Length: 293
Image 1 (cartoon, one colour):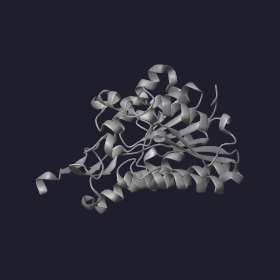
Image 2 (tube, helix red, strand yellow):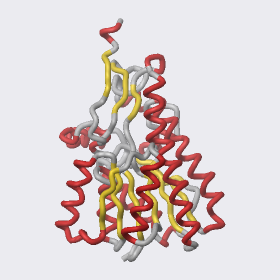
Image 3 (cartoon, one colour):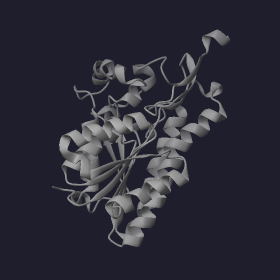
């Protein structure tokens, strides 16, 4: 098993790409802390994983990744329960601010950047502290997005945050290389998850539209991101650091042009503005713009 005896923390680990990665890491022999804001899905995930035979390898820790004390507590739980930290997967995310630039509030900006950018920074910071102290190196993986690679790959603030994640990945990889700590990012494309669908019961409806939007004829699934994360976490990627691995079914190779493929949804032409909160369990805060004109 490729991660036998390794200790991992996966934020946003209670659903979607995070949960798929948790299960894959467990199957490969890792001990895993599932860190997530949503207690209900977190507890459900632990119960399901226990039924699969992983009860002794996994624990849930409620975590707000934008809160530094929560991140410190999350890392401390990894140390106290499993004896250290070898892999940090900073995966937690939300859709965040949507709607036209001119209708976006500073509160929506703050919420989106806090979760998607500051949360990754804090995860890198506190994982690095432990890994340096342990003296055995480690792997840090950050979830970025193809939205961070172009000007029309996603909503404005979401895209800016994901660009920041890619930049932080490169800079921290350089700083941490002398400690044998590798830092890489994954840039997913369209992945059918509760976060992308806003509601879990709408995931299936995404699959056909997502698969038509890219060259590869199958929809992206959480397991595809889990496979990429496994590679970056394992010794197979020992000479890989400071990179962003695109996992998008060829979408960015073709050029996303998301505003043309999915008009009137989340970007500048959207008919709503506000902020979505992914799979956190909290409702989106949205307002219709046509009623204001």
